[in-house]
Image 1 (tube, rainbow, N blue to C red):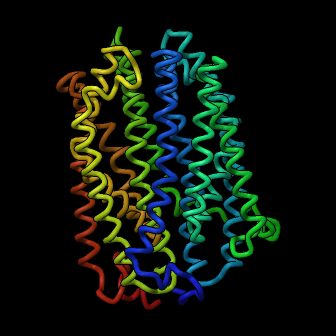
Image 2 (cartoon, rainbow, N blue to C red; image 1 turned 90 degrees about the vertical axis):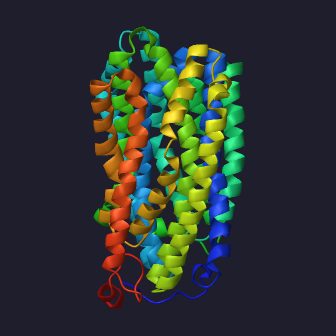
Length: 465
């Protein structure tokens, strides 16, 4: 329900195209930095530590997706609520949401640490099989990452809030500086001091701590941003359900990615036999390439979400519709360029991460399959984030959960069973195609039940309420 426009809010007055560029470009820079760090980290591990290190870090990818999912759960739910409150000029209500998100993030981080200490080592041993060196490295790496989740979650929370507050450029500059420092630190810890996978994990945790300190300092010095004092004026406990409901669909999609990864790893363990470690290492390289390519998509969607949330909260539906169209066009072009670039380089791309010819060849095979229908992935993600921004988690769930929880795992099992292990990677383009059909059905149904006076996805009655 719209609350009326806020005063002095450029999200409500600036031209949509210019507004989109000014928010999307810094966000792309921010998120690309994170993806670049993962790629460089994989190069350090593969070239200076060995294939076993790549395999160990790849094995824990499902667990890493869970930490990212939790970060998205809190941040995504908070931003949907916060953007609408700031769009309606209710900064006090926005501060209350900000405080509750802090309590939720830290509570989940504590729970994750306790759960991992109880059952994590056993799960890693099951995934790694009989290789004790890989098991040891995987456990050490993940233990450090899990212990650092409070820093990870709080940094993500503050960065998401700054984006909604119109400070995407500031986040971009901070991200570049922190990421470059992280790369240097990882090189020193992994290569110079020979810390191996532990150096990679410690480098990330230290960098997150520095990033959080810089963001907090920015809030302490600013008079226009949500103040740190806001966190002490409002309760941290309670009021979490709206945040969870809005953040859950996208968060569950990352848990679904972890489920897909666990399915792939288990399938490879059962079918790859002697080549298991090489296959996992190649898959780990590709997951980092996929992550690097995916993060700018997410940035485009998040920039759109900030614009849509503010304008929807102010009742400016034509502007929120325009933001969606601009974002869909931009992300389609991006996905097309990425897919073409990877098709042109897939045969040699793996050599940058490992000198093992088997790993290099498998990287190319996986990329050719996974990116066959990549052009539909970005528009579907943007559409899902749009529905999240306007407070419709059901449609977001349909677009983000079907592929990782249902389509891809079932297709992996079905193809390997019916055709053989060589067909495993074809599950990804098949799932993309089926999800595109689902997305088209949702769009057509939404248009059929909508109104020219209301925002896309909102009935005329709801718009007037």
